[in-house]
Length: 408
Length: 131
Image 1 (cartoon, rainbow over the protein chains, first blue to last red):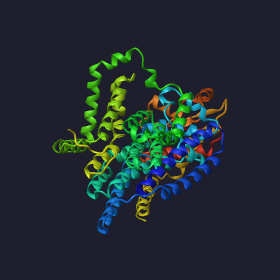
Image 2: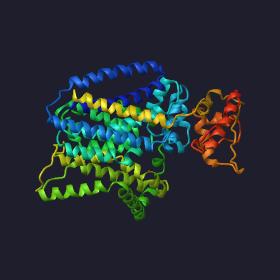
Image 3: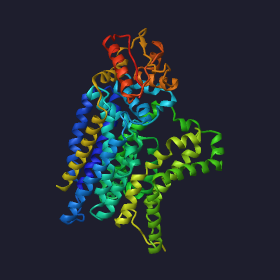
Image 4: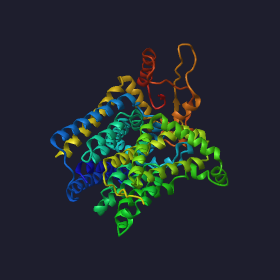
């Protein structure tokens, strides 16, 4: 795995570890300075380990001219992202940012106040995982203030690093395809707007994308199984749907992640964030979607009008900003049909995630129209960075873990 | 060392984004104090304390606002004090309810009024903003 990708993964894992450790330190009454020292020590040691101790396998190198082009595309794309971020950002983010994520960070920031988080009513969703809130609260506590630059900085990291990760993973194989994938996100007002909304959706999307990138290298290195597992654990700690995404991902990559003794590496990577999630769920009230299941669930499953309504909203989301992805997918599937190649399991994995989201909407006890209109676009966009990476990798003819196989 | 150059470009992008964000939302002195008062409310709240929220009335005499939104924002302003403690405190129900990006003359009126309140503030007088 190239070193530029490792740095991005290291940043993600640093944020995840900080968030988890700070949450545990609140429970154990550990002074925040101690937590800060532990995080700083881990940051240095892990960066050294990632850059030096994991072997760098040879990858295709570009000519000097192509390398310069890569720098220009990279810098230009990031400049577009920064400009879009300036245009779209609101001072305190969108509604859920100050109503949920930063609001909870205020509770987590205060020693002695954090337990009151679980006494909040359902509209504050006290059961939601705390990656974002805990991370923001930790920095606020160190700063001694509620400065909203903190959550915005994290959102800028996501807005910059997610497209960067796609580019850096693929440019050595095919600079043109990597550039197109990178610039499609950079110029996407929807992506940047969602990233700087200070919500947890795009950070989750970033973590999920990172898992796809990391697992590609996992077959040759057991340690990368642990890192992939840690990224999936961070997905779980980021949002409730992160659990569903992590389970689906693990099932599709069960041989790479769990077989042949690799389950020990997997367990070591996912342990901390999963433990934080379990502790949270033990203390928090039940999730409102879970609480609302019962006798009516079967009726919801068999009600066709619900599926129609969901399809209508999905169609609206796709036509509003995702048509290029649909066209690209259609072209790729046609190519696979013509060349008698299996499209690869990553597409099926992402489609399964969409089916999972659909079932959540089918079974929701909330008003379905309201639930869809307030979340369908954000939920589907959680898969977009990973989807762009998967499609771009297919077009680069990169050997993914799910190597294309001719079908009979 | 190519990876370091890519990393530096990313770092520069994040720093530029944050700098532009701060420039976009730079607040004049009085407004900054208003927000500071908003986020420091919980430190002063004690049983029996009176919390006054001053209503801003539009030039045509009508009140701005939406009661549910106001109540929600009171909870936000009061965090992390528990909801029980909030209920125990006596509240005067008038409230400043004005988006920060109003017309300049309206904003000036709010900041002027808030500045006076702030200068005379003690443990009993606070105000909230919605934006």
